[in-house]
Length: 298
Image 1 (cartoon, one colour):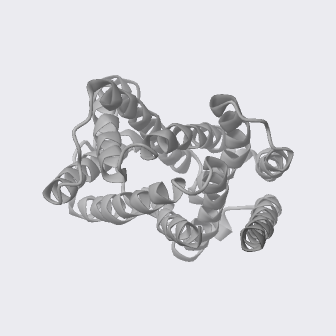
Image 2 (cartoon, one colour):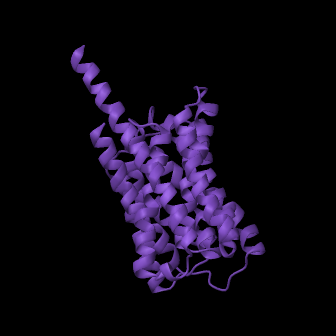
């Protein structure tokens, strides 16, 4: 359990850089994700294929994981869309709604009872976002897109957890990224028709940041977080990812100067979200200690 938490929080720390990278990469959100998936998928096939960690799968498993990859791709597109239409801080704070959506989606999809405390903590995160949404009208479009991103981010780990419990992590992640790239490739002509751009190909600077995004913030981060999913619930993983805004917002303030763009209501809403994270972390520690004490007694 301790190893799973360590892997998860390293992944969260790496994920905290993705918002800033979304600002540094000047491609539109659709192309940014398309290149990210392409680099990531090729890297995984080369790295884990050479290590012989990718096992053959039946067609139905490939199709199922491809569907999960498409949900993940849509999550990334909407996340970077929230950055383009709002800013880094807004997009990252909206991800805190993952805890609320997962507290509802996970029991529904896994046919388990709802947990009142998870619902309350998820609602607290929603309340923090509402404070920002209600009192700062400049970022409403970015917040709406960010909430769509949070819903999708809560959805795909639930399905992914089922796959990694029976198929090795390397195979699942490789097919997830490959499937995400293939399905996104099918919809990209329509996406570019409705959201045209003059910049279709990355320049040298964009290539550098795309490689950082793909290798560190995707391949390594997803490997660690997927390992953690074997021991932890999807809700725990999602709520732990609420720490991502802490790292990301700090970088946005220090590097991009976004502290000058937000109002005092942003800080209030952000404080409410952080309080929910602290409460959940404390509850997990208490539950872990009780479980350990029970094992020692038995």
